[in-house]
Length: 443
Image 1 (cartoon, helix red, strand yellow):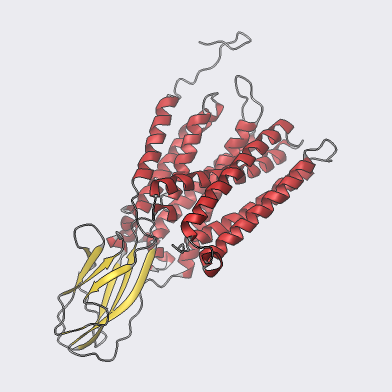
Image 2 (cartoon, one colour):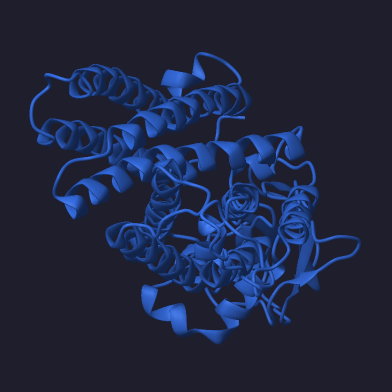
């Protein structure tokens, strides 16, 4: 058994997996997530319909066919056809029309009446899980009074709020999990790292649990949210099965698998002198599960955009989570923060903020397109608000941190207040980010 400098045997974790194998496995997972996405547009928009909108035909069609701008998840898409007398005529759920999943069709029941038919549709994009809906009409024989439809895809505010909360919890849990690990690595260590502070271990465990809970809720609520259904439909096995067949479902399951891996070997990796690289790869793998369901999964240069978004999420988790870790450590120690830990994290946080700014700038150019859309769209306005908050937080943090680290700065509560101020701003950034995810980009 290897000896340390004092001659005592150094404990060896025989059950710790080979770090190179773990790194290769995690890199392969991230590569697979990045390669699985192809070029697409922001949402599944209706390209054409047969019969065409507003057309007048001689006899009732046996089916209606809709073509979209990209692949749709058929099991989370709906088509409703209402006859001139107000009765529903669609006989079955939509079916995919090969090749691919860009065209769906639904058969119609026989109808002898002539007049105007209303067709309502809802389509869920296969790449980012966003739903679009619309209404059109056609007439048989001659137009008549248009029947009143019920509407498809009308959002349920409670369900959408639950979904947004789950997404927010996922981000917050990731930040707390990653931040506690970052502070542990920033703490002074010898050849054999000392056991972490109990408060940091508890914070990491809480972050892991919150991330898992947010992911599970998101998995169950995604289906009802796309359909505009009540939150009570989370127990609908058909909707859950449809979600599990989508890319979003695959990535959420992948996140749960990675969390199981973190629970198994995360702590030994942080204790191991060479555990930093595979730990970083695990964090990147978790972050990639967000980029794969974001706006980065559509448009041009998708693999590059996914990689940039993965770095963006990771940098945010390091910055925000590290601030949380500092607060946890300061309250747990009771005697202030070790200056070396604060100094090391300040360097890490500076790098994270730089990565956050660079990747955010790339995303803004990619999603906005024209400068006029910064103020002319909700997406652009939210992006401006997020940018202003980040700049204010960074400026305030630089001033308070410089003062707090001076020898004559006073009690350690000054540094705690500085970190708390940053954390409040970061929380506001996170809230705006969740709103941005639900907004279609101008492109």
